[in-house]
Length: 210
Image (cartoon, rainbow, N blue to C red):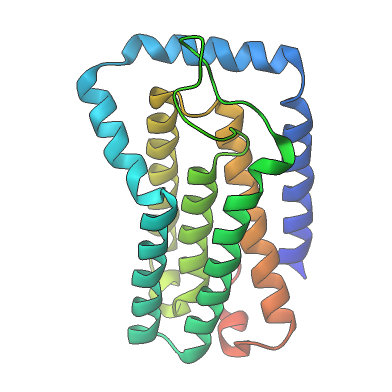
């Protein structure tokens, strides 16, 4: 129940950010932040940024999900595999559809967008957040709980590096990254709460909390 309440709060935060992205004032702030970051752009940094974001493109993220599934199958139980498989499938569908709800145009630093599609929320941030949290929620608790702080720190570092790379590439605005994080966290919280409420993986549910 706690996870479902957390998911609702996160969804409220996400919707609030989504509404604010439609305002001109927030757009100006986003553009100002991108202009500030553009002073750090160089060919070397852009090449590194492209490498960082690549694993969270649609098809590479599917490969990542398969790797996690294999890990769950090797060291977890059948329930862990089913749990992460369902989460990954719904996540991929969500990450392909959510942008068409808000239709926010991508940054146009040179007068036209450098990338196709819409901007809010960042699908890369959504996939990275949900895949990481989903993996932690699906793997055996004894593997996670002993070094919980380490796993949290690694996750935050990963997301900060990804956000920096996305902004350097000018693929998204800062609020797009925040929206992707909120939606990804909300989706995992909601999915985990509903999954456990149906009686799946009772042993896991009693040892884990988000």
